[in-house]
Image (cartoon, rainbow over all chains, first blue to last red; front, side, top):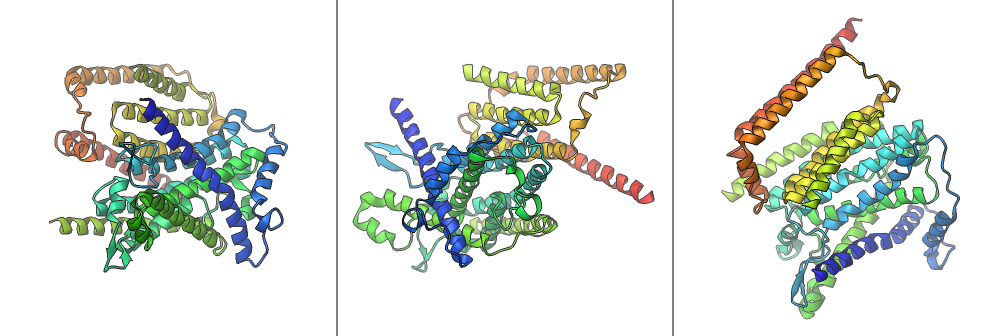
Amino acid sequence: MLEAIIEILLKTAVILALPLGALPIIIHVERRGAAFIQKRLGPNRVGPLGLLQPLADVAKFMFKEEVHPSHVRPFFYTAAPVVALVVAILPLACIPIFAPIEIFGRSVYPEVFKSDMGIFFAFAASALGSYGILLAGWASNNKYSMLGAIRACAQMVSYELSLSTSLVAMIFLYGSNDIHVMVAEQTGYWFGFLPKWGFFLQPVAAMLFLIGIFAESNRLPFDLAEGESEIVAGYHIEYSSMKFALFFMAEYIHMIALSALFIIMFFGGYSLLPGMELIADRIPASLAILQALSLIIKVASMIWFFVWVRWSFPRFRYDQLMNLGWERLLPIGIANLIVTVLFVYFRNH
Amino acid sequence: MAADILLTFITVVFALMVVFSKRTVVAAFSLLMTLLSIAMIYFQLGTVFLSAVQVLINAGAIAILFVFVMMLINLENFTNNREKNKTKLIIATFTVLVILGVLALVINNNIETLSLVNLADNSMKALFEKLFTTYYLPFEMATVLLLAAIVACVVIASHGKKAEEKQ
């Protein structure tokens, strides 16, 4: 009993520490990446290569005066950033970073919440992501905030549909909703060199999912919830200092969680990157570390992709966004689902 | 046992808040909390899949739409507009009594089957086998009801449009 409690506490500490520890690095990469793409220098004064800039930012956020506007609804205004952050962290509880291993005679699962329904839980938790934004927009009692919240809400509900259709298609294809089985299905190579990743099996579903996660995490080209040129800063216009930082953190952690889900379904999750088998064969004990490393490298590449897209595409117009979601992506998703189901049926019979 | 009682208590308190809260948005968020605590009850009973679906669909999509619409039309200007109407009160009481009676009948007649729900096997396969064999009729009835609701919505919406065009 005690062992189990210690295990869960340790795992919780890890899933909290990993993304929160990676945040300053991600934010630094985002700023330097933006500068690189726009031919600027970016933050390069604090520490070597400007690496200490995020720390300076944190110190600034901590000591900044907190402005609490008088026209807000106090309870919901304070609750909103907390809701946003908690809901963003929740999906990480179901994401395994390596295969189950044996330590001291007991098999240890890497995820905090071990269940074969893990992937549904991760999705359910990320579907709640819009509540933080909605609460913030409504509680701020401000027209711009309200507009931002309403936009975010409509956008997230619309794109969740195409996201779910591609999720269901992949579950049919792998024949299981257990994340470990999904990853096992993607381990190995076709023709000796091409990794058995879901992306090569189902590029359509992968594209749908990719567009969906951009919309879900409110990143450019889908950041209509913030839209600086139209509604100032959208839902977090009334928030300052640490409360604003919580929203910022929530956005990035949501991004990490959705990228991890994307990697699990389409890029082999924690299955080893090509070339890593050589090390794993020589030193079997390093397998779990290599798997964790593979997942982290894959997620990091996804984050870089997010940054790349953010500074390469302009923002959508609102009606274009809705048309894309409902008239393009959803029909493609449903057609893809039907084709996949037929394919799986004839493969199994 | 304690967890069951606590969860039921939370669910009922939030459900009452949905009805009695004076601010509509607070009521909508209470509805969300009710749905989430029902998901927790499912989880407590061991039906993990149902619990996840409850969060994903009811809390993640349907409740959001409620909150969305309430924010959009700014219902806050319409607080305290409950009419104290005698006929309405009588109809409401009658409806509540009928629903309670039906529920009592259902629970009374199916108390054994309800307590016999097999929780050891809560996989998706077992659940859907039950749904598509034993409970196929109620399942289809529910889909027909939903279809009727959709058709009604379309009719109401298009009717309003025609009237607008005539003006």
